Image (tube, rainbow, N blue to C red; front, top):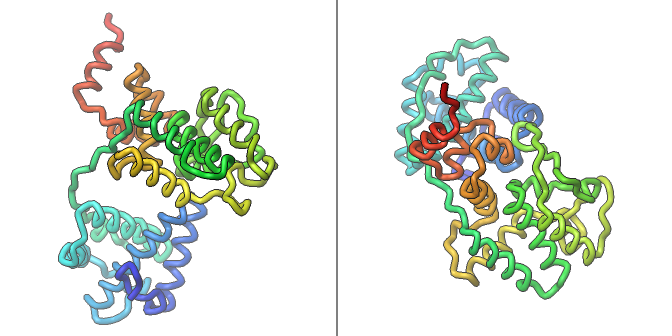
Length: 314
């Protein structure tokens, strides 16, 4: 067993192991999945294929998947729930399994429509909890005073300012390179699914990065990370998360005050200042407006108020 509770990868039939490896490679390359997502997908599929092995009494193979039925998928879901998997985690796991089955059905010529028609469990999507403007400012001030090495403190402030001031994902901020500096009026960001968007850069964000670079031991260079760790490599998300964790502990903020909460705060504060959801959707890089609605905690009543205020009348 692995740390995730899934059987070891080597327990798979060779043909299935090869198919799984190939699918994960396609997901990583063609769909621009993050390393974290690929790791989660691998665990999801290992759990599913291990279940099939026990359910049918033999290791699953790509050809054997042709016989999958709704009853198999329902049995898998029941087994996962019995292990204590929550509705949200199960829905994500089933989504990964369906994606793999669609891919392998195309490759092997299987008709898996029956298995693919199984619905995922419904769950209540938890709303994000953004920081108030005052909490966000206090956080940046605490981070500025939170490290004995001045350039490291300036670096941490610069990264968090980009999350709050530009709505960047932490991976997008830490993925910036020296060639991206100096910032112009906007940054071209490549987000999830390879979607590009233009994000305006506020003077406060530009000034924060300039303040960091003025103290950083390494000068920005094309192809080299803009934000560096203490040894010169690319700054890791875990370091930024630890910085935020220390700041929220000092300020008495809840556990939901994470780096990603600053991105939530960007959207929510922009909406409160009169920004429209469609523009915020574009700035965040969301593929769906419904995602932005949930992201900002906007309810249907607010949407209808915006609609009635803006819709042209004849």
